[in-house]
Structures are given as C-alpha cells and as structure tokens.
Length: 277
Ligand code: BTN
Image 1 (cartoon, rainbow, N blue to C red):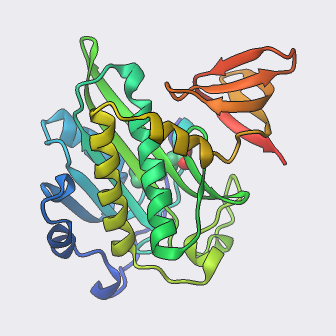
Image 2: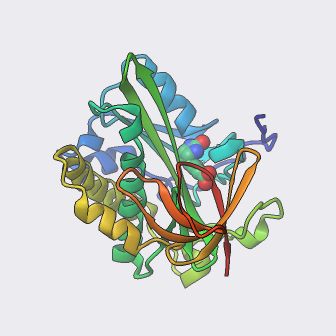
C-alpha cells in the first residue's frame, strides 16, 4: 500500500535557507558524491528518482537531493514526513561488486556516518536502532531506506536514502506513528543542513572505501557500541510473527542475535523492533 500526501507544495523560503548544489559540489571537492548532484526543490521521493536514474545508468556516487518530498517513503511503506527546507532528504546511488546478502553493511555505515556527523557538528550522539534508524533517547531522529536491484547473482545498483530531522519541530505534526525528534528539538540549535550533509557524505565515503577493502571489523564493533537495543528486551515484528527476546548483538551479516523466550539463541534477519524500556 502506498500513501499519497495531498499537501500542496508551498512557496519555498528565500534561497539563503536552501541547499546550494554548486556550493555543495565545490565543498565536496574530489569526493565521489560531487560527481553527479541532482537537486530538486520538491520531488515525490529522492529514492524513487534515484532508482529511476540508476536503472538508466546513473553513475556510482550520484546524489539525489531535495528540499521537500511529497511522497517521502520509509520502510514497510510508511510515510516519511518531509517538510520544505527543514530537514535533510537525500539518496545516493552505489554500484559495488557484491551479492544481495552483503547490501546491509552499506546501509549500516550510512547510519554510522550520520551519527558521527551529528556528533561532530552538534555534539549529541544519536544511537542506532536496528536495522537502520537513528534515535536520540526514545525518539526517532532519522531513518534510512535501502533499495537495490539484482542482475544474475550480483547487485546491479543500491540506492540508500537518508531522512534526518534537522530544524523541524515534530511536535507540530499530529500524524506521527512513533515519537519523533529533530536536532533543533533536542538542542535548540538551528543547524546548517549543508554542513551536516557535507560531513555525512565525507564520513560515508571513508566508511565505504573501508567496507570495499574488507576492513569491517571496527565498523561492526562501533555499530554494536552505538546500538540502542543491545542488551535490551525487545519485541521484533516481522510479517505476521512477533518474537520477544534479549538482544545479544548485531552480527557480521547485520542479523540481530537474541536470546528468545525459550532461552535459545536466534538470528533475526529483518523486522521492526519495539523496545521494552
Ligand atoms: C524509515 O525510517 O523507515 C526510513 C526513512 C527513510 C526516509 C528517506 S528521506 C530520503 C529518502 N527518500 C525517501 O522517500 N525515503 C528516504
């Protein structure tokens, strides 16, 4: 099921509040993500466009960026609220030579890169809620949506989209499914979206090259250290099934390892987690 936001696109604030693709390109210098920046004031979803572009041969590193999304999407067909010029909404196109089972690590390092960037720029450290949400305490600060296409046994392309709540005031939104927050709501700081974006992309590029070089041990370690749910009692909903358990770790393949109610170790590949605080 797809949700359609029928909201009209309002006039955007003055250009000073907008992301400036040419300035971003300059600041990114020789980065992979400076090669092909696609910027839209308003678009249905940066992931949807990135997938279309990738299917038509868009190069690795393509960055699709929007001030506003009218049909921003989350996992499990959820709506991602995407008001104009308040937050970050972007998607990157990657073409690593990998198999489908290896895609998860590329998502995981975007969560790490975003957490690192918020820590560096703002001073707060978002935690990572498996599989790929960013949280500040019990509130959601950001989310990642990864989609990919397979040709034969290999991945043809991966698109990874991040929505990060920066200057938005989520209390104004009545239609939230879960408690949300933003950098502004947490700190009172009106952060520069450009500075955050540059920092996230630079950090991601560094993680990306480490992953491609097979240097992932430190990355898994850090991902477990920043895990919001490690050591907690959780409920995992996947399809029609709900499993309860105590989280031991996230393993090298990105699976959640729990001790279930029968005292047995169980690996969960995907699902939606709720925490018993
Ligand atoms: C989730 O929490 O389930 C994932 C949310 C992902 C939202 C981002 S915003 C940029 C990109 N475009 C989309 O339509 N979704 C992702």
